[in-house]
Length: 453
Ligand code: PFF
Image (cartoon, rainbow, N blue to C red):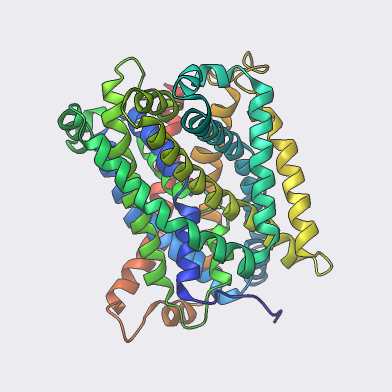
């Protein structure tokens, strides 16, 4: 077996896995998806799906990587040798999807970069007036600026990934996470002091099931996979770097739990501000960018808070982008023996750069291009996350389930020294075999009915 790098410490794995899971999905995407789907009942559905379906699938992906010591493309192909040749398409699709998601993730990361620099200028150069002149509408209408920012983000990501798992990623992320946690808590305390908080808590945590629609299950599942980085092959890659003694179910469950908590913190942090600014629809994908900068500039010390928030958000976006690019690179290197990590990273970054052109221009030059009433970037998001992602996640699950023997699954899952018992193992198998495929297919069926109506 090829010699493979692994994390020096267990902490290294957690940093990268949690870093990949917690990103714009939690802070930017989750709030407006909650807004679109009516609040409390959707949150309940989402949390249930994340822990009951997402976490077991995350564990399966990590185990697939750890047991094969390969990235998703080679791992699923190896599984296919035992049963079906279609498995190799699962891995290919996962990698292609990671690259396409990176290309539009870079556009949103570019927005973050923009606000971050604006707050920096407001604070240290021009006084607060400069940032108040910049709003999202001005940025949205400037396609070239968005393209430039997205390209800068891709370049930064490439430079970090080129350094490799051990020297580059582990060290880099270990500096960023504690700062990230501190900033989120500070911002949460600040926004909790707003008068709209009781109303927000009612909206977020009092479930009104009549607000759920036929599309809600599909939206909840798509977002669960996106936010847990399941279905991209990322967790297979991270699993392949795990150390022999690491216990996969414990690690997977912890990652899922932390990610879910961060999403809940994000909505509690953003919604009081969004309710205060009553003119912005809660369903707007730009919700966070619409409401937060303006609010922060209106309060004393807001420029400093704004800077802190956007630095924190940019760190999260960068962590997640590193994960996306790492999937592509590790797959290229695993598949081609002659491929060296450095050039593979630059090549992948180059392709992401070309792909980012369309989403970057979607709100300006390509504004007129609308698919079923949605902009290019929104259509891409919905096609990838609500349709393709659950399908690929199901494919990886199928490869794992069929390709790894009962015995191997059981020995990897059951840890005799810990609380994880045989009964948990049988629950896990039940979810992988019946519950997860069942709800994914049900989500698709309900979504199709909603579209036909
Ligand atoms: N989980 C990330 C988020 O919530 O923003 C998105 C993501 C990052 C998906 C990395 C996949 C991945 F490999």
